Each structure stands twice: as structure tokens, then as C-alpha cells.
Image 1 (cartoon, one colour):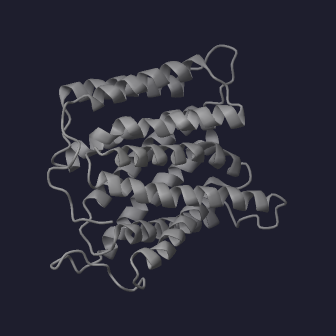
Image 2: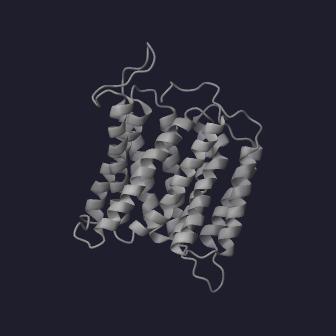
Image 3: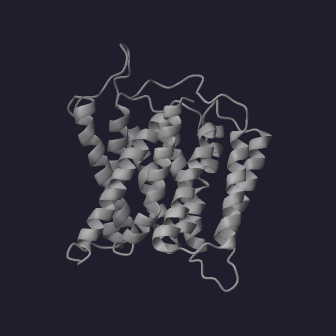
Length: 314
């Protein structure tokens, strides 16, 4: 892969890693569904606003690529991406983060490349698993079990098993959304596809939040702090997902998986530094096992680029 692709992946993982301590702080002020709904609705609006300058066409115009490009934006497909990749994924994810420590959440999130690799095996023709990759999956998931289940004697690590389980399940919905984006053949540009699906998924989350958590506490003395936190989370989502979706449409999911682990690494480091989360032996041992598993998966000797790339999207 070109050096600029590696740099883009590093930027994505750092942005996602920073979201763990920020999200944990925001959840001390607002409920998880409200936080997720605000984050992605705002992120979607940011991307759609930027698309007016990047695509240089009104939102009512479908951006076409190629002389015989697809004419159908496939709105049902876009809503499915928003439902799976934003609503279900981050609804469960934020609920899990609300229950466990930020560092544990970041560590469990390190399973995302493993989940994506399994999903790619069944969905994408050129991203197949081998026996070596199967060993890597087993090693990495052992690490996840160590992180989420074990606790050292006399130490309160803040790890909650249910919270870790919800985060782990949410990763399957997130991977489903990524697979759908990779296979998208409609006429929306990638920035608008991402923006519309985030707005749709965010709106669903806000509706669920209204039913389960009530209205947002606008009169809270911490509303200014909350606005800054949600604003940062929205910017992270808008920037990181736009970059990431562009990369995974051109390069194999299994080739990128080793770098995806960096988001969990950044999250654990930043949570320890800024939130004072404890460094425990299950966290260290589990993290080492996940690293070993993901590196094993990456050392498959295959090419990185997709043999048949999808329709070009900026």
C-alpha cells in the first residue's frame, strides 16, 4: 500500500482512539443513546455540508461516476447501512461503554478487525480466511476473553462483563455496515453516502433515546462541556469514517485489520492518561494476545489491493 494509505489509517485509529475517553466523559452527563444520536446526526450533517463544496452539486443531485455510471442512489440500501452500521452498532456500543471502563471498552473494541475479517470471508470473494488466519482469530479472541472476564485480586479495574459483551456484539453490526459500504453501487458519492447513513442512523438513535432516556438535559450546568465533547465525537466520526470507508473500498479488510487494532491501543493509552484507568495484568495480557492474533492474520502473504475494485468513489 502507498505510504499515504498507512498515514490515513494511523489518523483514523488515533481519532477513534481519542473517542473512548471523550465518550466516557460525555456519558457522565447524558445517556448513551442520546450521546450516540447527537454524535452521528451532527457528524452526518457535517459531511453533507462539506459535500456541497467537494461535490459542488446540491444535495438533491445524485453524483454520477463514469459515462455509464449507476443512476439509482439506492436509498433503501443507504438506510440499511445507517440502521446496522450506525443505529445498532453505536446504540449497543455506547451502552456498553457506559457500563464498563473506557480502557476496557477500547481493549474489547480491538476485536473489530477480527470480526471484520470473519465477515469479509463470507461476504467478499477475495477476502478469504485460511487456517493461519483461523489460528489468529482464536488467539485474539482469547485475549478479548482475558480482558473482559478476568480481574486481578484486590483490584477494581472497572471492567463490566455485560458492557464488554455488548461492545463485542455491536462490532458485528459495525462490520455489517462496512461490508455494505464496500458493496455499494449506487450513485451517491462516498461522502454523501456516509453523511446520509449517519443522519438516518443518528435520527433513529435520538428517537430511541427519547423513548428510553427522555429529553436531553439542555438546562444542565454542564451543557457547555457536553457540547464540546459531542462536537469532538462528531468531528471524529465525520473525518475517520469518511477516510476509512474510502480505504476499505480499495484494499482488503484482512490486510488492514492489523492497523485497526491501533484504535484500541490509542484508546487504552489515552484512557489511562486522561481518566486514570488502572493498568491491570488482564488488560496487558489480553492486549498482547490480541496484538499477536492480529499480526498473525496480517502475515498471510497476500496482496493488499482488491483485485476487482468497486466503482471509483472519492
